[in-house]
Length: 375
Ligand code: ATP
Image 1 (cartoon, protein in one colour):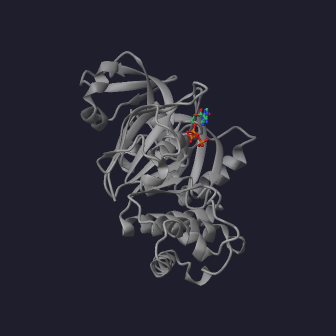
Image 2 (spheres, rainbow, N blue to C red; image 1 turned 120 degrees about the vertical axis):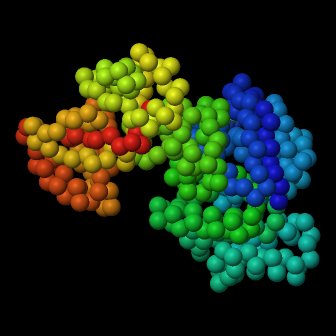
Image 3 (cartoon, rainbow, N blue to C red; image 1 turned 60 degrees about the vertical axis):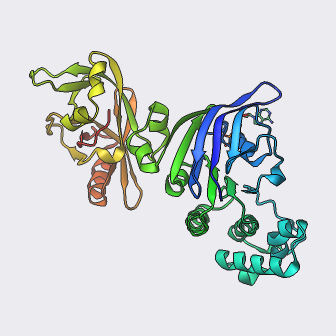
């Protein structure tokens, strides 16, 4: 096991495409780091550079104190798990898992012991003599993991390993990967475009956009303190609501601030101002206010004469989506479409009222702002 360090790593492909720019990341021994970002952001390129499958154009890559820029893939002592599993169809599960060890001429009884140990960890013992075509997608995925495990590498590198599985299996395998990584304590870099996978698996998550690292932080910090608008919008499902607003001084002279959102006014909660005094620098300027759907608490449907006290946004519910445990209520505030999450209890009311009212004069929605509102 080892630390993996990227220092100013960049990649320019031969056609001039700059896929990764000045990437600085330090993955601690035993850490699970997830690289996440939209398609084309450079995450696979970054991982392939660590694996040695792609040349590094700029910067230095260290695996356990050793600069490995020029070390070939097979000598880097890392194991890659691909999206496609890359299994040999004509070999049994046993031979697939042990393949890398046979190549290295490890004695047969040692290979047998290692393969059987990995199979136990992965729940594959009863499938060792089957061919990959006779396995389910999840079992094939496990065989690919097994091949990485038996090598006892310094690091696991995983490129979207769950993307070929159906939704239910993905959740199961996600938990399994987390467990195995924790048990083995192997430094892991995991690439995905799925922010839920990133948030549930990573000790830390690195968010990339257009080849540039945007933020690297533990999942909760990323969620609570996104470094910029891109991270704010990318992390979280349903996504954070982002509203254009203007920050003004509150009229009552106590130093408070308010946000003008379209024609409506929202006081900035005192706690937000205490935590982020730098906000005052934006006084009189256009800002974007970010509100997590679940922070729009106590959303309630009221009649047209409803409560319009400070700290509420008034709008009209466009759509109510019942998701079982949660209900998403969509409504428009100026140009922005806003989503709020609600409890099952409310869902029943909202579902009835709003759906019934869609073609008729529509019901108003008041979303109260909780103190967790972020600006
Ligand atoms: P995805 O999730 O779609 O796999 P990604 O974030 O992993 O995307 P990369 O595959 O690393 O992104 O690609 C980053 C950029 O580099 C993209 O613009 C891509 O088109 C480009 N790219 C990838 N491979 C090559 C190549 N061999 N030659 C030229 N450009 C490439």
